[in-house]
Image 1 (cartoon, rainbow, N blue to C red):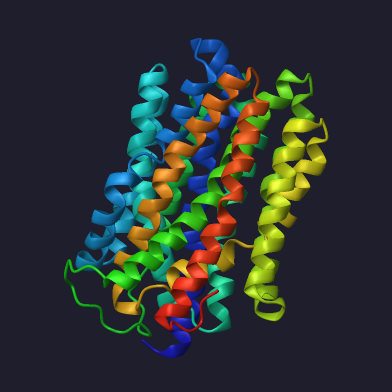
Image 2: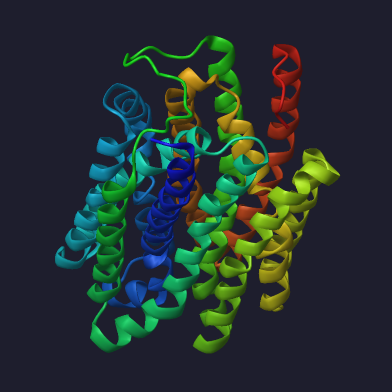
Length: 394
């Protein structure tokens, strides 16, 4: 394979990964966008709703590490191709399940598939993109998630109202099916990557600790963000806001995320990774507190979805580069095992906070508390990196 052809293929591969991430965001947001209808239709409380949201993340707690090992043993194409196909299958189970139990089971199946794609995406991007292109590749892959989540909030309530609550789940399944077909068709092992031993060995202890701490940073960014876009429709509905305003708010918080992530990754090399991380995290905390305290949803959405989302590429680079290239697939599985614990527990804790508080505002305040934990985790990671003498990390 020539370098020119490889260069062209890398962008096709990045597009296939990004489309899988769009499907991931679309599916993850389905329960949130249908939240008011599901609560009324099935008579569930917000703790149960949060459990259904978190069910998508639940499998990652136990399968992220095995899938990372399988990716190292059998290659990314087979593991990710099967995984994205499972995302499509799980969506069908959600639609045919008939209620909360079926939705829970289907989201667990989809979640298993999403784990395979998410765990290995950083390794695949790092294999095909290097230097300054790495931040661009990571930014594109990460920013695809909010595109899917924003698209979900735009179209799913209308689909549910017109064709029944099952149709949004089926739409997510169709999107995942297309993504699976594209990935299988275009992905090949990178000729630029060093040969990886096809073994089940783990990284060294120092690398493991670094990627786990980086995973905590990612958790304390994504869990509050996901809770905001999941609970805000119910919050604004309770305040009497229109579906049109809710759609604008979620669109700003999600699609505004896309240029923010890309620009944040680009400017991080100029202004410093620490500055970019602190700017984004403080803005997110402020936006969450404001979202619960005052009825300024557009301001909150801007703070969280735009200014508060300039740091994901920085966090993802920290996790990806915490392990050596030969250990990266397994290292990122540890990164995401940590993230999935938080992704499962976070929405349920926020839902419980809403029940205890007596309103959905409690979920937003709980999300703000989680976001605050990102700062000490980030500082601990910097100290570990300094002790380990690892270059190129935040």
